[in-house]
Image (cartoon, rainbow, N blue to C red):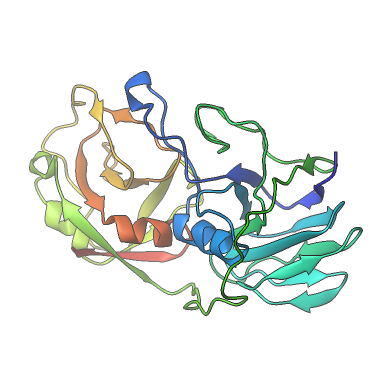
Length: 287
């Protein structure tokens, strides 16, 4: 089997597409890329359908070797890539000959870099998706050295661009829009969510961004500590346990929960939150 051979994975590298839809009634979440916008951009650069599977790389550190000719792109967190030791552009089209190796540095900002390849990565689908769900364990295993990623047939169309100008990612405070509800009435001070800043906790992962209060602004105070009857929770839900420290649900979030949801992050800002690094500050604003 030919394709892209994994030489090094960095801290964590996962196969992701846009997720498995239509299975919530069976208790299966969507999962998929934490930063959907970056995966879609990478697929457009190499001429794929936006939903093709790529590799989501935490912080950087991935190394691969081409066992066949391939066309790839890196998007998302701007880790510098090197083809046989020569720097190549981020968010640009990169051609690989057989035997050429690409190494990815660690990103100075952002959290997740995406590798896309023309033809997509064609590991077997599970429930209509090739995504790895880290919470349920559904999907391909995390990548390891010596794994070879099979590449699908090249699409008939080519991208019209070979470089995508994108706004730079920074480690500065992110303004994240939120809509209050559905359980804001379960808090004595729901408006405190919008006051001051929060910091992304080191306990954050693909399931949720756990937030710590920055400074002396008050935490969210629940009217009581009793759990609600279990109810559905959506991507971007801001769930608040008795500690008053919010958790924003990301790609691999549970689909039900008993803690009250004070608000939901605007869909357009979920991808930005998926790129927030531990320690980075968040400021919530009304949508």
